[in-house]
Length: 392
Image 1 (cartoon, helix red, strand yellow):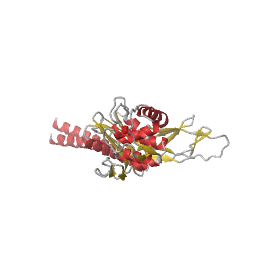
Image 2 (cartoon, rainbow, N blue to C red):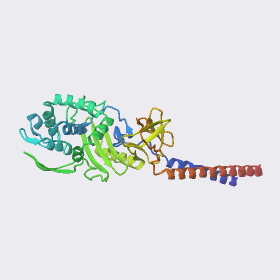
Image 3 (cartoon, helix red, strand yellow):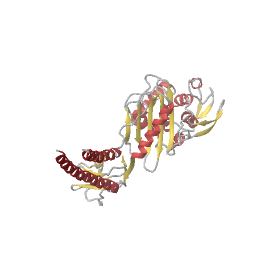
Image 4 (cartoon, helix red, strand yellow):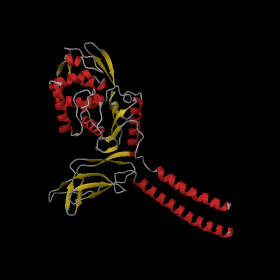
């Protein structure tokens, strides 16, 4: 009987080893977040790496100012001198303490808007660009829909103070931030940690409110950020971060506690950087399907798991599909058909993953382990059978 028990323990041990090993190779598909909605967007490829309620209607609070800032940068003249109205002077909430009649360059207002989250700066910008807050709301909604390309956002003010008709989604905010980060002036201001401010009634050093950006929660890859809070929205956070492989945009919305929003953001950044990479196919690479040749005129960027082995598949209509080892589509691109007789040198897409060899090695190891377990199972079964014969 002791021998039977021993053999059973050995058998269970082998199977447990395989189960634990297989489980350890899996990447997490969900994260335990306190924020009601969240998203990770890879800025270069546009790939959504992770999302939680990302399409749900939410209140953005001061993340609104990301849209106001890029709108002002693109549609206004940053050298314009803006005269501050009494309406701007009397704005509630966080301010840069503008005075009625004060004259301030538009660029300085955008800096006060993003770095110190100045609601008064937002009103001054809106009135300067559109004449009134009502007209500004129409203008920026049209801009967000037709220029930026988001579908589920509706703003009624430039600063994000609560209004039931002032809403967006985590997905839309990520896309707005992605669009804005293409602008060098926006990137510079969005990543500013502190700025000397000299105003009619307030001389100070503006310090970003974003605690990761200013180092209270150290994270070397972070390049920019914006915070937000009103009672109805909870704590909201927008964060950008980059390394040699990825440029991430993380949005978290409606956290009940400020620190929880930062923990969520750091967990999301870790998840993105630890599990994904972005690679590219050089411009001018040509592909052949049947007798037709196709070319990509611009670099094609795609984001995949660091463990993926990517292969290409061309459809007859010129669609290039990138597929991983699990036959999951990573990205698809419509290529340009080359003219008949045009000189070309077809290039077969190479595996851009630097983990291809390790993937093969892991596959060989797993097969070897399974063969060992299978052999052990047969031996154990045979010995168990003999033991039972001796007992009975």
